[in-house]
Amino acid sequence: MTSVTDLIPEPRAIEGPMRCGVLLDEGTTLWAGPGTGTTERWLRSTLGPALGLPLRPGPQDARDSVRLCVDDSLEPEAYKLSVIADWGVEIRGGDAAGVFWGAQTLRQLLGPEAFRKAPVRPDIKRGIPHQIIEDGPRFRWRGLMLDVARHFMPKDGVLRYLDLMAAHKLNVFHFHLTDDQGWRIEIERYPRLTEVGSWRARTKFGHRASPLWEEKPHGGYYTQDDIREIVAYAAERHITVVPEIDVPGHSQAAIAAYPELGNTDTSLSVWDTWGISPNVLAPTDNTLRFYEGVFEELLELFPSEFIHVGGDECLKDQWRASPTAQARIKELGVGDEDGLQSWFIGHFDKWLSAHGRRLIGWDEILEGGLARGAAVSSWRGYEGGITAARAGHDVVMCPEQQVYLDHRQHEGADEPVPIGYVRTLEDVYRFEPVPPELTSTEAAHVLGTQANLWTEVMEDQARVDYQAFPRLSAFAEVAWSDLPAPAERDFDGFERRMVRHYERLDALGVSYRPPAGPLPWQRRPGVLGRPIEGPPPNR
Ligand code: ACM
Image 1: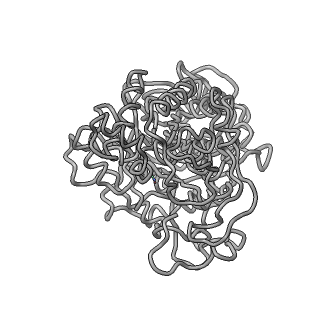
Image 2: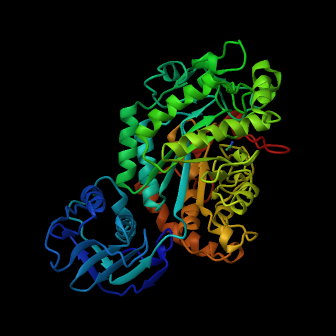
Image 3: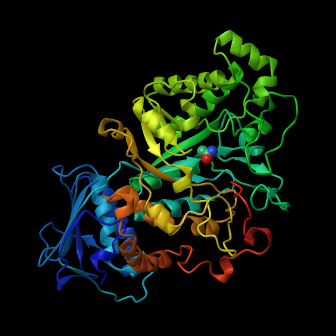
């Protein structure tokens, strides 16, 4: 039996656990009240194969059964999980999502075997101690960003990450679909975006200062059917998918496919190295109409309130050199290239509002002013988020210094991805999304927080797992639980709970970074394994 103290993220309050408990077995029935269908389906499809618990439908008053119901006296996403003698397991949720998060806790209470795909023994029985858990999230935006542009992750890998998010009660999947190095979503009216833009001829191996290339094509994209499947799979898990189309910078793959989107006559290929490409979108009406077409198809596929337009790291050299861009600056009266960027983002802000959605972008979109409804992903530290919240904009806090999980986890010479600052498990556990400078009114604009996985040096799923875990487990607790101030957080206690959580991650097949450092097969020979001297190259 799992002790409640092993739960991750840690719940708000627990009464118990008692010594005796409820036993679930092949005959245990499930009653699912109105509005709890997602959890009913998820429990059967998960606990059935893992534990041999088919959870057949049964009456509400069956002894020692499992019951699910929505109870709107609880807050949204909150739940109360009761394990009571002669009654069984009851999960009441403030809404359908609350019931689902309660079911995630139930799975943890059932032990690491509940995380397997097939039972270890067919006749397995599962006991849960009598207890009552009351729980709910601190933030409504508990996000993970995955960059599938730098390295493509096939659809099944994405579905697996949605499952890993659900297991950690994370609920926003920020899908970084386009960048200089690849365009990953089918847009029917512009087939070259994927025919040309989704493949590059070779790939820089390691960080951008590395002298090595992997001399083989890399690519892939999601068809619109794939995207529909991903969005539906996420919705079944109460996860919202927020797509990102990065404009006007980070657009070399699109320009390689449609050269008229660029500022020069030079023919481009999809970029094969890392950093920030100087090739950015031309600020023309043609570009605006083109991307309105892209966003029209996007809105058909993604029902999310927010649509991410990137807006980060748009180098302005080409605009400075381009007579067309300079004429545009004069015609619009926007003063300079920064004004032009602000005009560009402002156009899509208005366009998205007119289509009933809200724009979100990286904190550079603040430069030059931002429309009222737009929100900001604060990545260059807290400053962008503080400025945005003070100006009344909603904010997602994801400062690079704390929650960029591509950054190395240890100084050690055998760390396989030696880029960025060292950000340990403890650093992430002590990350505080709401800076003390904000008043409570301003802090109410912090929708939540998000960990970001940029994949320049993560060429496959095992490498993504290694960078994400166990830090994403610590991050999930930051996003969900009511933790005290960073210095007062019980990191030792968290590490003790992680012992059991590593068993769950093992059962899920996650190749996390072991606490003692990389396993032999996780290490890397050559340039990637060398310690970095001097300031760390940042991608
Ligand atoms: C970013 O890391 N360029 C948002």
